[in-house]
Amino acid sequence: MAAPPTIAILGGTGPAGMGLALRWARAGENIIIGSRDARRAQEAAEKIRSKAGDGAQVSGMENSAACAAADLLVLTVPFEGQAALLKQLKPAIRPGSVLIDATVALAASVGGRASRTLGVWQGSAAQQAAELVHQGVSVVAAFHNLSAELLNGDEYLDCDVIVCSDDSKASERTRLLAAKIPGVRAIDGGKLENARILEQITALLIGLNIRHKGHGGMRITGLPPEAYQ
Ligand SMILES: NC(=O)c1ccc[n+]([C@@H]2O[C@H](COP(=O)([O-])OP(=O)(O)OC[C@H]3O[C@@H](n4cnc5c(N)ncnc54)[C@H](OP(=O)(O)O)[C@@H]3O)[C@@H](O)[C@H]2O)c1
Image (cartoon, rainbow, N blue to C red):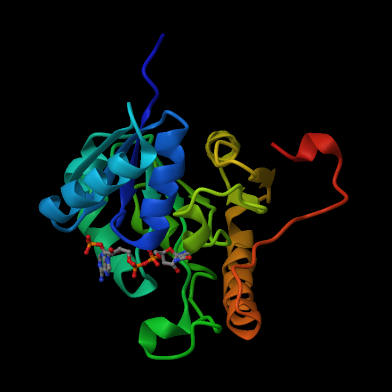
């Protein structure tokens, strides 16, 4: 049987990246945690391996080494670091790679509220990412609306993941990956420009979580069964 493709999570030492890594490691995926510091990445990988259980394939590397070792990349860094990191990683990202961006341009990045977003000239953080990578790299927006707190636990996630991209194959690949998280249904959300709506929903969910003291997610109802992966 062919080995599963490697997924590199850039900025994977934070709660969002570690939560995704945990869920995918449990599903048998081969994960690299990326960090600005290789040692921090290795420590995070060790934590995930110990939680994910026997046989979990998780390693840690500096971000550019992680890009060179995988063609499926997930970006989980705060908005204030996104552009500079992508400029730095551009030469290391392999042509033909898929870059899944989960960045949300929260106003907290500039000292504002986490329940508000910033205006991004390109329309969204994901569209900004698309401008910063080589043309042969497909950018996908996904996973903005999953709570890291829940991802890092053991429970079934009662959430849908809407996936937006201008590359339908990259979108499908991402939906298959999303559906490996127990409880998650993945939905094709159309073009990358719709990422601006996904990112706004995160700010709304953060506000709801503060108001109601919970870990809210989102379900889309009423679509035909084939719309859900
Ligand atoms: N937390 C959630 O529930 C959640 C859910 C969905 C989406 N998101 C989005 O996912 C992203 C990550 O969220 P998070 O809560 O995991 O963030 P975080 O803990 O603030 O950051 C994640 C990692 O990014 C790296 N990083 C931090 N500042 C950086 C910079 N200036 N340049 C390059 N790398 C930097 C750090 O890794 P190293 O120091 O090891 O390099 C850090 O561990 C954010 O854009 C967030 O809006 C979060």
